[in-house]
Image (cartoon, rainbow, N blue to C red):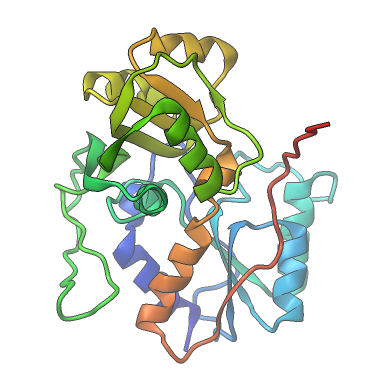
Length: 281
């Protein structure tokens, strides 16, 4: 089986046409006509992950975050990006990134976050229209594959808790469900929470949209100091951390590939790539 077979499946689930203009999803190293020996799924393709792939007999690393994001003028190993690319090329390991295109489908990254919260009545928070005709996947005929159309693409997700929670109870649920060391959040107001907006990764650009949608709480990551003021006492704004919000994406990638290739080796990286640590005293 060739890499192109795996790539076609991933791009059926999340077409490259759905990625944001600034993104760099797709095959970053290697050739699509290589014979695939094994797949290692991860959130980040780092040098350590590449070496892990080699050790475990995999020549395809499927990552959520693109290791090549900006322009590279030199590749001499002076930073983690260059070291990763050198390791991948040296060991004949392909890197495939499936980033904002997987964020922008309703059954993608944000849906997995909603699963952890047990949300119901889910819908896209900020729907988007893409000019290119999207492939339709028959969910009934091929279990495990996702349905994509212009009604189910866009940024963020909106859903509801099965039952109302007070703010402290909700934050405790987040802490346990995502195994968090801490949560940064706006002041508590004492209100009950029912409608939840969320966005994996850096999602402060959707705060106003969450407010307009009537959300009681917005869960995301990478919120800057002054951006917490944007909540303006209209909702609870909770920052759970970038890696923490997207950590279950790796499981989603494995499920997608195993559903199509049930007899093929699709492995989960054992390396925690989160570069952030917390000192709790």
